[in-house]
Structure formats: C-alpha cells, structure tokens
Length: 467
Length: 50
Image (cartoon, rainbow over all chains, first blue to last red):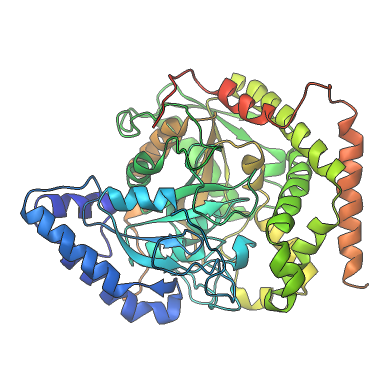
C-alpha cells in the first residue's frame, strides 16, 4: 500500500480488489507505527475516516460511485477548515482559524469520494520554509532522520512520502507546497493565482496565497487538480478561466517544446548536486525531443522585494491580533516577520501592488515569447539538518529561510503555475528536485512535461525505507 | 546589534526599492491589473461559471 500511487489505489477500489475500509486501515496502521517519528499529523481523525470508509464501501457495493477519488485516503494542511475538526494553523491555539465556510478545495476532494484522515502539521501560521513547529513538533524528513521536511506544508509533504495517505492539500505563499515536495521527494503543484479557490483556508497573504495538490506522481497531482480547480463563488479571486482536462494530453510528450533554463540568479550559490540534477533533467528532456536552451529572465530580486512588501503587510494585517495581544505564543521568527509588516506604510504597500501588476505583465510577455516552460531548481540545497538551524537567532534564521525559498517566491509574486518534481537523490540520500514554470493557466503543459520526465527517469518508484 | 536593527534595515531597504521604481508607474496602473495580466497572458479559453 505504501508503495502505490493514488491512481493505483483508486483503480484497485474501483475494480473491487481493495475496499475503502482496507485502504484506510492500511494507512492508519502505518500512521500509528511511524508518526511518532514523522509528526505529520496535528489531528488524526481515525473514527471519522473509518466511518467515511464504511459509507463509501456500502456505496461501492451498491454500485454508487462518488467520483474519481472514491475511497482514496487523503489529508489536509491544518489551515483548511472542515466542519467538526479544529484548525490550529500550526499555532498554540487549537481553534485559531474559525470560519463559517468549509475549505472549498478540501470539500471538492471529499465530494469526489476521498476520505480525510485528518489535519496535518505545518509551520506556525504558514510562515517558514523548513517545517519546524515549536507547538506541534518538527516534522521529520522521511528520507533521513533529523533533516527538515520543508515547509510550510510540512505534514503534507512528509505524510505523502511516508505513505500515510495518497494525496494532500498544501498552500503556497512563497514556496510552501513546492519546498516540502522537493525536500520529501514528491510532486507538488502551485497553480496559477485564482485557479483554485482559497475559500475556507486561513489566509496569510491574500495576494500571494495559493492552494494546490501534493502526491507521489505527476499523474496523481493532475487528478487532484482536476477535482479542485475552477471558479468558486465563495472566493471572488477565483478565476472564470475554463478548466481543461488535465489528463487528456498528459501522455503527449515534450517533442518540440521550448524549455528555458534561466542561468544567473537561479544557480548562484546553489548546491552542486542540485544544479547538476537540473542540468541532467534538461539533457533528458532534450533526448525526449524538447528544445532546451538558456534564457534570460528579469532580475528576480526586484519582484522579490516588491513581494516582500505585500506579504509582510498583508500577514501583519491578518494576524495583528495574535501578534499584538499574545505575541509570547508565537515563535520568535514568526513574531519578527509580523513586526516588519507593522512598519510598512500604506503608500509602499499600494505602490508594491501596482508594480507587481506591471512586472507580471512584462515577465509573461518577454519570457514566454522565448520559451514555453522554465526549468529551475526548486531548493538551493537538499533538505538541511534541523539542529544547526535551531542554534540560529530569529533574524539569522529568517535570513537563512529567505535564502531557502528564494527560487520559489518569484512565481508567487508573478502568480504563475509552478510544479516541483523529484529528480533523484543526493549522496546523503536526500531528494533532489526541479521546478517547472509556465504561462498563466497552463498547468496542463507543466504536468505533461513533468509526466514525460517521470516516465523516462523513473525516480518516482523509489520510496524512503521507513519499515 | 539589537534585534530591532535588522528590521529597521529591512524596512529602509524595501522603502528604497519602492521609491526607486514607483516613479515609472502611469496613473492608470492599478493593483487589479495583476489579474488582467494573468488572464491576458493565458492561452485563450472560454470562461466558465461553475
């Protein structure tokens, strides 16, 4: 079970070779054995999951199929509001995020037949790229104990990689889906801004927040995206852009596609194994028929500074109450970030929003005139060991954290779709990964390229040895 | 160095970036142009109303 993908489990249930109760039971057994080490869950909902599995089993016996995820165990980052379960958002407060609106993306998965195992660990208030959490425990890396799982959707990344469930939702304001996906050796997709409704999920920065799927394979992620994408009246920022069939062209390959590797910023200070892995990926895509070349992109530092003004302002606005009334409950690095936001003027915030619009338009026009897809590293180094990070001061930690997410954050600012795909292992046995970035609403093309890579490279058949 | 100094330095840096770039903006450039940039930058597809 732990070595199968969402697609194979869904097919086994559909053909009655496995029941939803068996699927959930197998996952729960694994969680009970291994989550003391992994710390992927904040709230494990065993009774809810088993109840749902029995209902879905009865439906299956009667020939009633709820959707493509009938009986498939999944779990949700603990900032997704679901009725009946608390939403801590990684804070000390059990019910930090109170909402009358259920998380639309989570609800769509459940309505398609998925079974929720519960709510997943995350960095406090989704602030931070490593997956550390002083209140709920640091999520461990399934490939190497004592190393970071990546964050902020740390439980989502580690839980998929550990075989606790077949798919998960994460959120991504500066890399929080792609970083844990890269650190844990799974696939993570940050869709285009507005592609997936943000309703019912704790906001960190309404201009930069994205919800997206995480799973073992690109095909699994495509299936999850198919279910959650699309307009939602509960989120006015969700797009009316039509949702394509993400599986229809998945097998079409990469022949003739223009893949651009932006040198400079995206490789400066990047670990040698990571950089070599990305270039090896470029060579493989070339062998598969793509035209791979270097491409110049606008200096990301400008958009990163503008994004910093926006995210810090919005995060401090949204989380002012806990920052001002109960600052002692927050981890020092989270408190430090919120304090910066209080010092930004309305003038700077609004100018930053205007500049973001201009820079996004010019980036799309200039870069995608040259290439169809960008290929970059996702992380600048393999998942680092946690102990040395713990020794840093809050400000030192935030500088290091900013560097760790510097390859993903530009694409939150531009709102572009970005897919992280695993591409092998470092000498220490930690996952390597690359990032694909495309035009707005062109998730289908990223999935096609990522799938072609996975089929050719086959790294996705390797799993961590957890027992 | 006190803990506040890095934050003051970060704020000053960010304000400096905005001051340097904002003068290039035309009056009609509003925040909502961001969503328009995404929609205009996509391959054309029909709208939906789910």
